[in-house]
Image 1 (cartoon, helix red, strand yellow):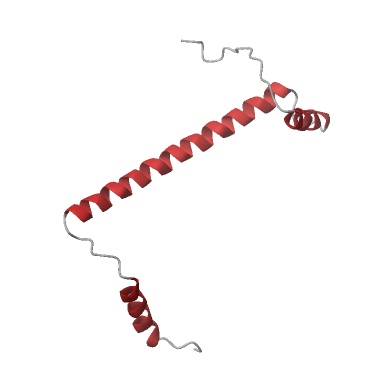
Image 2 (cartoon, one colour):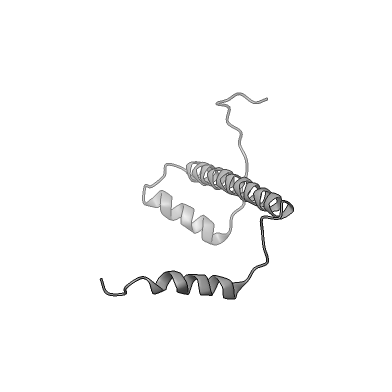
Length: 98
């Protein structure tokens, strides 16, 4: 297992557009090195990946609950007409000008 603060040198190949963006950021003084840019990009990628994993786990949990509801008979057939009628009935009692 590498040391926590150890640094490993790697070669990264990027498109000409990405290389130009890196050079622009360096010329503008936004970063001290191309390595700093790549490290920030990797941190952002890791963060987004963790978010996607969390969202996927939540979705799977919701699906599991839905599967349990279906198995227990708590879910009926989808009836768009029934939903529309129920919505219209609820909206009849509301005034558009209050």
